[in-house]
Amino acid sequence: MFRLPRIASVLVLAGFLSLGTAPRPAVAQEPAAEGAEGEGSPGRPLDGYFGTAIMAFIALFVVAKSARR
Image (cartoon, rainbow, N blue to C red; front, side):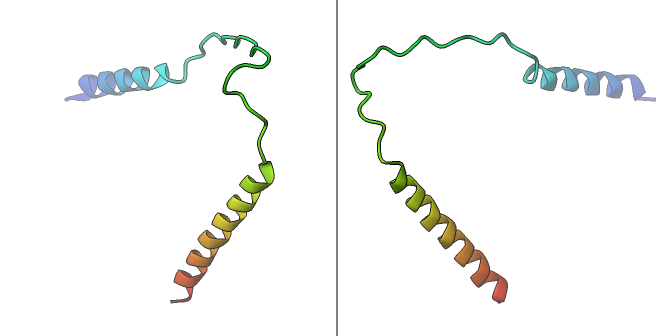
């Protein structure tokens, strides 16, 4: 009885959802100017690795503590 409106609404919804996954043209970035202001040094990656390891340990510790109960 209400098959056509239901099918139409599903097709319209699928069409709108597929717009987000439609291929778009790729745009190349402009090359960065050498010595640009605010660029600074590459940083200290070890600090980030240690911070990530500490956060992962804390997350695993919390999950393990809650699993024992």
